[in-house]
Every structure is written in structure tokens, then in C-alpha cells.
Length: 582
Figure 1 (cartoon, rainbow, N blue to C red):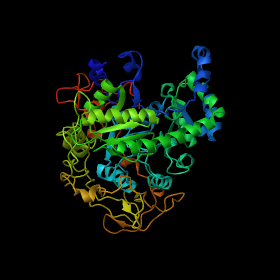
Figure 2 (figure 1 turned 30 degrees about the horizontal axis):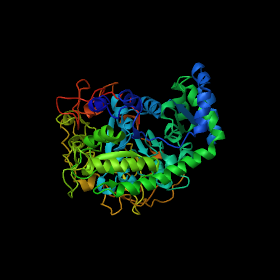
Figure 3 (figure 1 turned 90 degrees about the horizontal axis):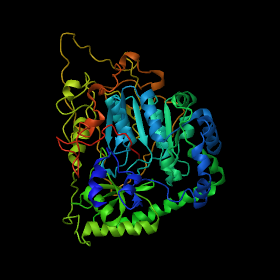
Figure 4 (figure 1 turned 180 degrees about the vertical axis):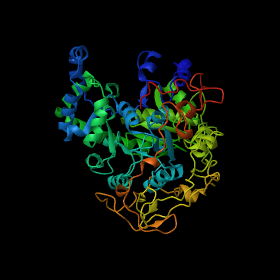
């Protein structure tokens, strides 16, 4: 297998090779899997025996229609079927959300699940990437994220809770307040694919709140929770109009017979499922403690069924990954090809203690030189230097942030937007003064009325027709996207937001522009149709945005090097991301 490791990883655009591919290159048995985030305790052995006994019928006959399977799932979850759409995995639902509901632009914190960046870029949308800071433990500050969305003029916002790959968690009241603050956007998506593994809150899901709001979708997974990625099934929850729009586009038999069989089994195995989640949470705590004992290794707090770790200074993630696979038959997820991350980070799935001991032993040998091939860490030193992924991440996030390639951004940028700043200078603000105001008590920024001539808003001076609009000067980083203050504990305490109200209401605030009257709620002053940009033709980067191939610095045709990001003359194969899995 050793000779084929590099080619296996080069043949995937944004993920690791499948277990089937790895098994074909070995003796038929795959490695110990610390890569695919799957529940190792469910289904139970008895459930697998039941499926094996019924295998012939399951694979011979058509499944029932999706409506029948959805109705059974909803009876278990106590959800109205008209508010639910089931898909052939979360990626199918993300694809239809993008095609039907994302018109021009989408904002998402990075690093995150790759389909939330790649999918809209593949259809020519602008993706505004909000970088999560290592100095803050990759925690998402919702107030800063809201300000970023307003500054960029983004129309769709995405939050993954817990986030993949770092496992960062947001409390329910904060997410609900964010949803209400973004009530004037086209869409707000809350991806709760890993929320079943969280234990920081008794009832952390916002599915009930989503059904009552006109522009919110909650995405949920089944394959991850049930340990059945291969079945490919998940669902979304929204108000009946949104859910029905997605459901109407799905094929009648988009769910397979295995999915049907498992859904109809669940009512008899609820206790075993709950116990499996409890065991994963216990294993996560134990695994975090064991990994934290390794010198130079940083483990970030997580509420998912995985841990995000930073390798010691000098360790190259691709080297560690390849040696763990070839020398110890352990598969780990190296995160150098995740936008917003680098090759110095690994995502490690929570597994039983016997497997974790094997993982820790293998890392000790690879990192610190107790094997015949020596150490992957040249020397133990301080600092926060990055490995091979840094240049690509800086180029994508700091210099362009989804607004265009170097040298092309100025030509393609929308009128009135500042040019993209250099690395470390923050994100560009619109040339016009921002209309977002912040709650003086530290709460969520209140969306401003966007229509021209709205009562109480200062009117911009008219531009002469025969004069070109002057180029905006990038503002200092402190005025654009405030950088989080480094915390002693990587996972900061949740922000204290006021209790959310059913609808946004006027709030006293100090505006960023000259003083004005308190802003009206977004619902009372929707953005006029003239303020929306013209739709972008399919396959064309929106307003200077990046295609999926450009994001990975490639043309999608030539081969990539064995380690690190592709150079100027090389490429990641399959840049469109076909065949990816989480």
C-alpha cells in the first residue's frame, strides 16, 4: 500500500480516499478509521444481523416513496411532515438549496464543511468567507459575523453548529438571536449535522424556531448519527413553503431501500441509540485527555464526534498522515486542503479507547522518532508558524475573500466596494457608510432598512454622472472585522445576548454612520428589488468570485504534488469536487 498512498490522496479533490479505495489497495481490510466522522456504537450488532438477514429483499425491490419514509421519520422526531424534506445525504440537500435559494452570494465561516464553499462557487456564486481565528480557538463570534455579512452585502448566511472540523459550539439562544437579526436576508442555514453528539446544552437544536420563520432552514444528518454513511440519508426542517420547494424537486425514489429499512427500525432501538451517543461523549473526553498529553500537540474543545488538533511546530501534516497509514494502518484527516486551515491541523474522529491507545502510540512514534524512520518533528520549538497550507489560505481568505483572483479583483469588483486588502489588513467595507448598528449592551447588530429614502436614515450625496466614483480606501482592520482577543481557554464562554423576540424591533443603538433615528426592524423595510445585483449566468464567477478550480489554485486537469498545496503549474484533480463525502 505504501507505494500508492500519495496517488490515492492526490486523486481526491477535497477529502481523503474512500475506505473502499483503501481496502482495494491493501489485503482487503481497511485501516482503523479516525477520518470519517461516524458513530462507532450504532447500529448495534443485532441490527446489523437483522439487515443481513433481509439483504436479498432490501436490494431486490424498490423502496417506498420518499413521502412514506419521511412520514415515518417525522413520527419519531415529532415533526410535521410538511416541514421536512429528506435527501440522499446532506450534500443532495445542500445542492438543491444552492440551486433554488442562493441567488448571488453566500457567507460562511471558514474552515468548515467543504460543500458550503465549493457548491456555490461551482454555480458561479460569490462566497464571502469569514475566517475563524486560531488565537480565539476557532470560536465563531456571531456579532462580528453579522457585521461582516452587512459589510459585504451578503444575501445568504450559513452557520454549522457544531462546526466541522473544529467542533465549535453555539448556544441555542445565540443562534436564535442571530436568525432574527438576519430576518431580511434571503436565507439563513443552520447546519446541525453533528448536533446529536453535543452535550453542552439539553435542547440545543433550533428546528422548532426554524419552522416559524420565513427564511430559515435547519439541516440535519442521519448517516453520521446512526453510523451509516454509506446509506446516504439526511433531512432538512423549514417552514412548509421552503421545505415544500425543496421537496418538490427531489425524485420520488431519491431514498434507497436501506434508508427505508433503517428508519422503520429506529422506533425499536431508541434506547440503544441514546446510549451510543452517551458513549461517544464519554470517549471524546477521554480521547481529548490522551491526545493533550502529547508534547506540542494542541487539542481544541469540541462538541462533535471529532477533535481538531494542531501538530507540533515543524510537523508536516501530509507526512504524518502518510506514515500513520503506511506504518500503523491508521487513517487520519489532514486538513491542508480545507479553506481556512493548513497542513498543520488534523481532524481525528472519536473512537473507542482501545483504538485511541493505538492512535496515540502511532503518533508518538511518528512525531517523536521512536520508529526506524525517525521523527516527523525536526525540533521542539515555540511559535505559531504554519506548514504548507498557509500560502493558499492567506491568498484565498486574506487577499481576495472570494472577491476575485489577484490582479483581477479590481477589474471585477462591484462599484462602491473597496479593493481587497493585503494579508492581515482585514476584510473590505463597502465604500458607503455601513448601516449596521450594534447593541450598546453587546448584543447582536440590528439590520438596517436597506431601501433608499427610508425614514430616519441619512441620505448619501448624489454622485455626478460625468465623474468616476473614487476608489474606496480600505479601513483599518479594527474598523472592518474586529479580530478576536486571544483567550486563555480556546473555547470562549458564550456571548450574552438578550432574549430573542418574536420579530426584530427597534433598538437604541449608536450607528456607525452620523447619528440618526433608531432603525426600524428589517421586516418593515425590505431591500428594494433595484438594490439586488443582476443574476450571474450559470458557471460564471459572480462579481469577480472564484470558481471551485480557482479556489484550489488549479485548472482541474493536471496532477498535484505528493504533499502540500498545488504549485502554479500543478492542479488538484477533479476540481469540481465530484464524489466527495464528508
